[in-house]
Image (cartoon, rainbow, N blue to C red):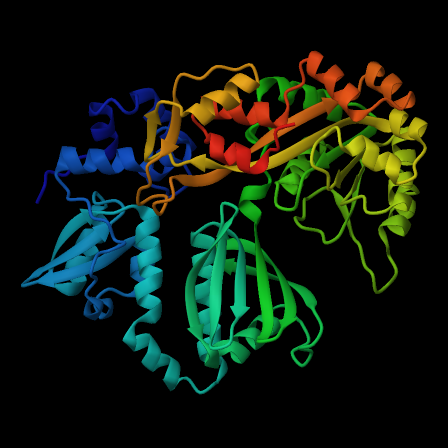
Length: 541
């Protein structure tokens, strides 16, 4: 048996963290949380560094589980519950030795427990947490004994319940934002949108289609017998002990109903404004804008550009006892304590317009309108901001400046738009380079050219080679790029004189506004993302 050392000492010896950082982390960590996990959470080390230290300092071998041939007969020796709780996966058994993939091979309690329970000697090997998680899901959920168990249960629903749980668990583990269940002629395809891109994870036999769809509809309180009209619902649930809110949308297609499940991870949304990735200049401009007592602040960008997260973070920042904050949303995505949230409802005739009128009689300080869709809503929102309210809302436009003509096209008097607008933020999400396989290279001609075009220079760029942590994509997680347009008196004058968008753009450029593409390229320089990602979401004006 290797000498039993403490992780903190090993990381200190490897000069990855200081004694002070370890002590600070031990004080801050949650009850029962392991030191390694707490250091990862604080971003003081990467999972790759942790694995390498354990591998080289203590001689634990490191395995990749993606292509590892797991012996499925061992699933009877180690229960799924034990494997999930302790983040371990049995791999193979030779004579009296059981090879066990562990996220923390220094978890001697788990090793001792398993040795007592199985009578085998445990040989720990290291694997990344996410890999173990996905492997547990993959093998325990499709193992033979599960199939038998499914057949034993009386109800026709049992396999569908189990399949639904697996689909959701995988979604939460992959940190997917949406799950697509697509009926095809001979099978049911299951796809996950991770970091903004869809990929197919598995397909299921056509025989499961009707019971799976019925199961989802029961959970979301939808009408099971209605298959010809689209329906919407929501499910509140705990998946892998994480509270999640699920939005369900059904759509009839030729091969049956397609279902999209939007996963709202309640833990991750209420970020602080400082965690949203604003660069310093934009952050100061935005804070000044939202801390004013009145005016209208608009967030723009396509669906899935993180507008809601920025809105909620802003409301959360302003959410104090002396403020009456009321929102009208369709639907209410995240419930925040201390904020009065009103759900827009077609059937009862509670439209945005009606809701907004009633809200203004409720003596609010801050009003949030989920989205400005028509000129009537726009008109009331503009007037509310002129009568001393701070109004937040969203619009679908490509850039901050393009929002101005869009409002005027909604038949609102230019002078009203001019007086009410405090500022506009355009936002996009780009994929973040995986920290574990980040590599430096010289910029290509195209990359250098993009930087020069914007008056910037670049010596080196970063990219992800692709590793196990990021499933060979080179990216892991996302971050926002923003442009913040502050409406000053000069812009107001230009708007009143009907000057063109290009003239306004020229003016704000001279004033030092950081456009989307500039913010993106600055984040490329910092090694957070790649030029391809920025070009994918930000149009070069």
